[in-house]
Image (tube, rainbow, N blue to C red; front, side):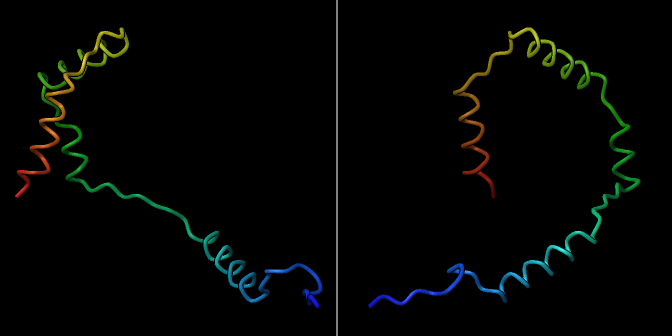
Length: 85
């Protein structure tokens, strides 16, 4: 003889109540971001040579001529993780 629950199976009314209260708490919070004055100063300091290099790379990407040396990239990643001391 097989006995089954009456109504939807697998529902725990106590768990449902907990998730509803968690959702209500999450709705009340607001995310905020604060940028320190030092970070703003660093953002405003720009090296002209670096800006020129960035503009050159952006142009290459938009033109479709930007090429990546995969072996050099792999070596750099390897050295970063292996020689990271």
